[in-house]
Amino acid sequence: MSGLPESLAGKTIAVLGGTGPQGRGLARRFADAGLAVVIGSRSADRAAEAAATLVEAVGGTVTGADNAGAAAAGDIVVVAVPWDGHGELLASLKDALAGKVVVDCVNPLGFDKQGAYALPVEEGSAAQQAQAILADATVVGAFHNVSAVLLEDPEVASVDTDVLVLGDVREATDLVQDLCGVIPGVRGVYGGRLRNAHQVEALTANLISVNRRYKAHAGIRVTDV
Amino acid sequence: MSGLPESLAGKTIAVLGGTGPQGRGLARRFADAGLAVVIGSRSADRAAEAAATLVEAVGGTVTGADNAGAAAAGDIVVVAVPWDGHGELLASLKDALAGKVVVDCVNPLGFDKQGAYALPVEEGSAAQQAQAILADATVVGAFHNVSAVLLEDPEVASVDTDVLVLGDVREATDLVQDLCGVIPGVRGVYGGRLRNAHQVEALTANLISVNRRYKAHAGIRVTDV
Image (cartoon, each protein chain N blue to C red):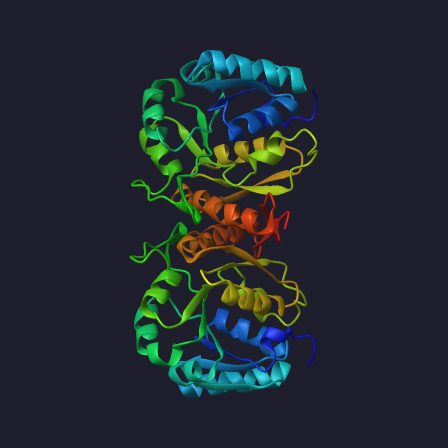
């Protein structure tokens, strides 16, 4: 496929937790854009199955592996796993992720009858926890607020949202902004340093409230940019 | 003036901290929409001065008072004071604010060389602190992310942003959504309960980062709503 930015040419994107809704949706859009994708999962079998489904749906180069295999295979590694177990998984992949750009999409949220709410995180945010664990990787926060429903829906040609990209290393945030831009309709907007990731992760709770009230799949656009 | 929603007809809006940039900007837009406005400040003299300046600029019914006088005079009371002293001020106005809708716009932020960052708040957020102190008022969070520069600029005919409105009482959030809508370009969108106010307050730190990077006056729009 054509149209990939130079920064992403020949790059393989691993998606850890690639069998969950958010991971599946991102993997689908990355593959559809012509990027090589490795879906990671706790179960290599389920990952291979999800990869096969994706190839059938959108074509491209998609393979499956367990999370460790995917982490090793990816040039850029997207972390789309549940918050529960996030730290333990990353600690187990520390060596495989050294030197790589790791894109953390994880939203530490709790749910009760009144909906979703932000969970406290000792390190400040999931992204900061990832960076604390992965001292030799460059962690970038992104894709927190993108509707998995829209990402996965083949009828949705364009996903109407900006993605706030958070990180402390310009080269890495620029790269991840490029990665956002391969999804039709999506624009990566630099949104500040990792220390300001918590509120972007937590904002997903607000969007869940918006979705309930308005029966929507809400996203956000940054105006005047 | 015409065009005010019925819910706001005849209502007086008090703006505590109405001599600061955010308060001045909101007061200006409310007055311009035809609402009666009382500007509150620690100094009644400075409030009266700001009110006179506003009347000269946009006309309408704008008066000034100390914060206690403004709190007593307003049907809806907007709190746009600095975070430092927020709790003490509200505690001193507890009786005057009983039974009223109090709109908290305050962003608990710190600043250093790397820009803005969210401050921890014992009650969770400024809005929750306000509600904890003002047990007999109905606190709604709103206007956190609106650029004071755009609000104050007479050349800006339309302020291109949504306002997330947070609260636990539907009647009050509906009213404040109506209040948002009197500002040209602005739409009030229900954004969840008060327990999810922190991240909306803190998101202002991200928008400050956006403004630095892109030389913008960023706001947000909620998509699919």
